[in-house]
Image 1 (spheres, rainbow, N blue to C red):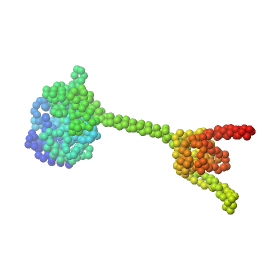
Image 2 (image 1 turned 30 degrees about the horizontal axis):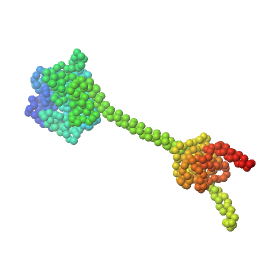
Image 3 (image 1 turned 180 degrees about the vertical axis):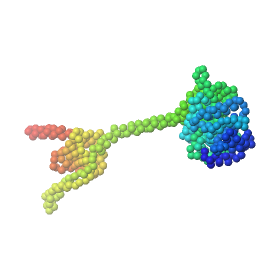
Image 4 (image 1 turned 90 degrees about the vertical axis):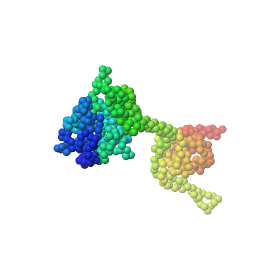
Length: 491
């Protein structure tokens, strides 16, 4: 704490209360009392400053002149001097003055319990680190509660302006004055204080950690475990019970579903049903959202599988062929030749003559280069308006349809159109550019087709309805027809 914060805190306390045993200015070794902080079960806590250095400290003075209380006080001072972790208040000095023992330690701030899933988890894990260090030394705390958790370098913010840590009435007013005098800091670290009830763990014959039996329960009602408060039997499970109650207080007794399971197990009335260690309790906190994460992951996988299944179904039915059609088609310039028949001489209407004129133009369109083998499509393909050119050598079997402003130019290829939509409903214009064979597999000859099928007349072209599917079969059929015609003529 900086000097301004200390001065503000001391000024907020004002003079030492008349109910205190010692007045302001009383000297305890190297320390001078400046303000009264509060009273606990075994002692009183004052704000003090070093006589020579002027540094501040929290001075705890034993208030009960009993051998058992003094034994606990000495044990607390010795334990605090051995703990070097930041999870506990720093030890300064121990001694006796004015007829009673005193303990000088780091001056920390009281604060409120945090709120929110992540803040509560961070807070409890820090407290678990402190309790786990005590357990590793064979010591149980026996009095874990919000009032025994102080904050170093700041304090957490309150929620809606409400103080959330339950404090005793005699300590509430000093805490309010202290919080008003201390400026908040952006970073807060909890520290576990008040080791007066800490006790050494003894191991029973069956190997379970227990403490020596205390006549009458030791601890704070509401936080102490049932076996601790009723029979004075404190174990590692007792501290875990207190941690579970502390977690429940952070949520005002209404924990979320992810926390309710952890708190329910930690606060079980049967010690054997609680977590076996503080490490296991902390592990459960870290994994509190694991089930939600796994559920979300499974849901994402299931949704992805459903989407993949739908995509695969679409892909196998039509998407793959549409993709293949688009992959084979390249946009490019199509050079088209149109045949126009014009009257030769308009002056002789009785003997009309015509001259054939060829007009060449260039348009943008889709060009499909066929492989040498057969290319088959099982799903219909609907052409958009525009120019298309299919170039062989090769054969394509496809149900092709489209509007009357779609033009398909065939060159050196075989097109078996499997459409069953007759003209003029299916009004694609076909243009033979040489060596092309167009076969309507499912249509009969219709005079309407003459309006939609054109030829340049320069190369071998063929048109069939329900005819053979290849040039070879077409040649064989034509040869048989020619032979039958010759036999008929010979007769």
